[in-house]
Length: 350
Image (cartoon, rainbow, N blue to C red; front, side, top):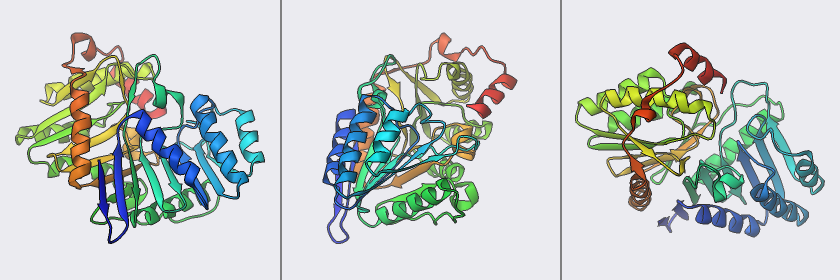
């Protein structure tokens, strides 16, 4: 679904399948004439990662300025051969330092400083073709217009941080089309404040999707308070995580939220990686932040919010498709093998 505003050159499209997400990204990379800035938590040395790396190398040799930022932990598997190949082509690569507790969890691409891709998708095979968990369901927004300038400022800030320079994070920006928020905004409380605004502003319904449902206790209280005032609150999570130890933690929170009246829905034979919310059918939030303590309080995240009818309609269709794959929790979905103290320790580390 596409929105447009010819007066200001704003245009956006919500991409909801691996084919459209990677197809659109690759097409824009091929069309780059001046610059490509990419920032990802995971950039893998698999078929998908190598295909993107080949394009970046080709564009760099054509004279396009290519900068790549990756997280030291999320992209720890990137091979020396891939790094050597990209560096020799003239690509500038920097890592968010592995020793920092915070991780650069943002996912974005900016082409020629006028086209942006933002969402929850990393550069790896499992996002494109799935894995043993099944097909991965995620979303990405491609947009052009005034809001891209804000992302350029954010990337430049992250670049300076990655190379070890002192930098002041840019202010979060908003327009009639989009509101962009990153973790450093609002004194570092941007993610938790966004979640609170999403829940407290709802009047009829909230549907949330997250691959890792491990929220701080106050978030469960917040969702329960919305239920108490008559809002239908639904949370869609996968039956299994890609990090097996998190399954037990998630089950404990699923059980806790269900007891408080939250409708918990389990997707089976697929993996939900989308970090998304639809509020009253008229506001869509998406990006990189999970419903867990790290995303809300520690990691560097990027989220966007829009009330555009076309985007909200596309989001609603995506969520309806997920609901068709869902079932209510079984007993096994509610049983955790970890005591609460161990759960808190694991959450902090992972």
